[in-house]
Length: 212
Image 1: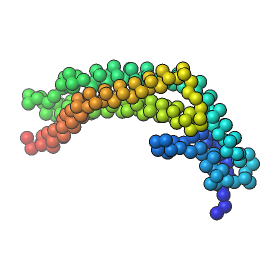
Image 2: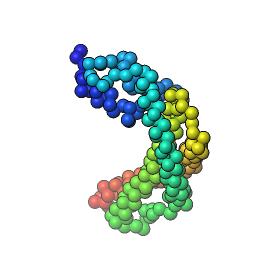
Image 3: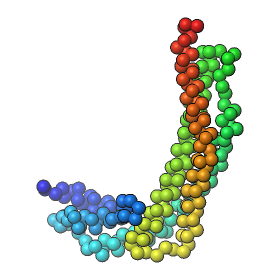
């Protein structure tokens, strides 16, 4: 097998800037450059070789550089979570769900069906977007927190004492999002279920409109 020099050089230059350390599962991790030197060395490519100590020093320098923006990134996620919690508490509230329009027996079938179908789609979209946005915030907080803990542990770096409060705020974000989704899960499911039933009923009414 002939090694691909261009691919090897690209991977060697991209990994340090994008992901100096890759998390496999739990505490398991590896350094891509170190892995390449141990299992896929290609010394024929100029500038694509280094000792394990050099690789780890470069990775540590990059992690310490990222530490400078850690607090700002954590604060940004916390503000996003606070805004989402306020909106989700309102939009996924059982009171709001019960106030959605319903199809009564006195409604016109065609016009009422179209209105019900449109409102059902809007209900599903609204509930889905708020749930998805909350999951995305929690996922981002989890990646940031786990990355901070993993990189420092893997490279033997000490945590800045000023980052403890930021890490605690990320944990609070994860707990708050999980609690909100747990508390409002019944309302969210009811909204999706009711909207789906409205859509089905509307389509059935349209099909039997000619027979009627």
